[in-house]
Length: 123
Image (spheres, rainbow, N blue to C red):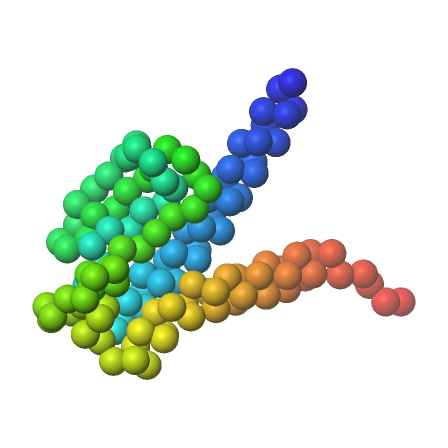
């Protein structure tokens, strides 16, 4: 029973790490493109922990099955400066593609790190 609980904790931790990396890609590119990020959260549901930054609220939520990066003008059109809907199309594409691209880069890095430790010596 204990090993089952430890396995669940490991899965939740790894899933949370992957979500953090994915959403971090969206977040970083949005900030580089001068798009205002209202909230960056890992998990869904009730908030466990939160901190208000200069313009972004950072949150950790109860259900660790995803996350989100809420940008101004993403859901409803906004004419405010720094909104997602007012950004150019290449910037919007970059923000959207960034999450998946960061996951691919992370997977390649992990692959090469693991291969460097498991490399067989040729004699």
